[in-house]
Length: 95
Image (cartoon, rainbow, N blue to C red; front, side, top):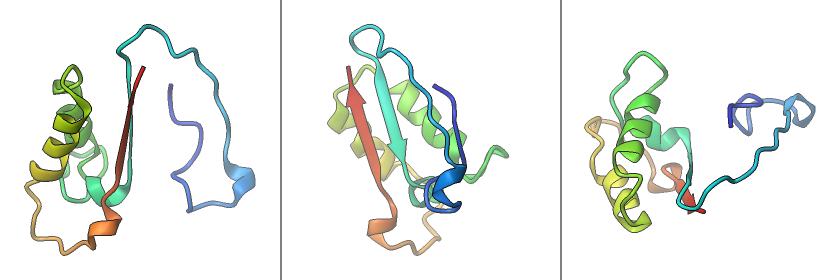
């Protein structure tokens, strides 16, 4: 499922689109995260840390959800940023 609009909160509501897809087979993983979490990862040129975070999740996609979350909140290397803890959020859902 590709992006349908800009990130939430930066555009008027009528700028957002919608897409529908079937969930597919059991075990698929949906990962949602805020830019505050990606900001703690190194920039790989595809946005501040987004590809690094996605890569960490993909590498661990078959592990229990708690292990994936623990990893993405402890692995970031850009610890120089002083982000408020509530600016780093992730949600994982497994089918």
